[in-house]
Image (tube, rainbow, N blue to C red; front, side):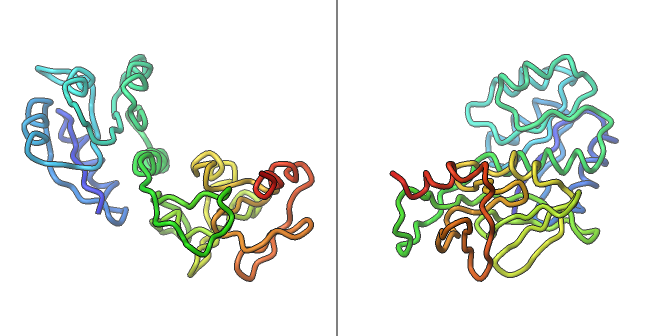
Amino acid sequence: MIKYIIVDDEPLAHDLIEGFCEILPHLQLEKHCYDAMEAMQFLNFNQVDLMFLDLNMPKLSGFDFLRTLSKPPKVIVTTAYKEFALDGYELDIADYLLKPFSFERFIKAVNKAIGDNPQSATPDNNVENTNVPQATNKRFFVKGDKKYHQVDSEEILFIEAYGNYTKVFLKEEMIISHEKISYYESLLDAQYFMRIHKSFIVALDKIKLIEGNRISVNEHEIPIGQTYKSLVSKLYNS
């Protein structure tokens, strides 16, 4: 479960964020905090993965509060003041949501936040090519079939462009996503995923073999685009 807190002096903001989070699986609310001092006291004795943080609060502003934390959780700023965005990125926040924000924009912020600290997976002893890194444990949400699926990047085999949509091929299923392939190219870590064609991104540790202009991933044969050949060749030419 991804544990989160909401730090905002507006009750309506709490209701909105909590309502959005309830739609998503594996997000667990730990605490409603209505000012920075309350949040500070809670975090002194509790750990969370994610914090939704307002900026304009009494006693102590959101950014001043964030500066007091030696090991803050991932932070999504929620505010009506866009002029403070630069300060936020200097504090290494995950994303900056301007009120009022849509559910679609909220999903993208959560995806960025929960995927920022991937944990190294256990190496597969069967993989002989040391030039191919192992995938990391990065989770994010995919909208498909009017549902939001939580996806672990380790489960991804490859992603295929499908008009204005994409097909996300996992070990056990395929999800038709409402995002374009460029969205996944920016979301996924380039150390572990590679664009090999204008219509395909592959997980490097799932490659079975490379032969001619094709890559094999499980039973799937995926073409290598002409402009991507030199990039793919770096996988086996040390």
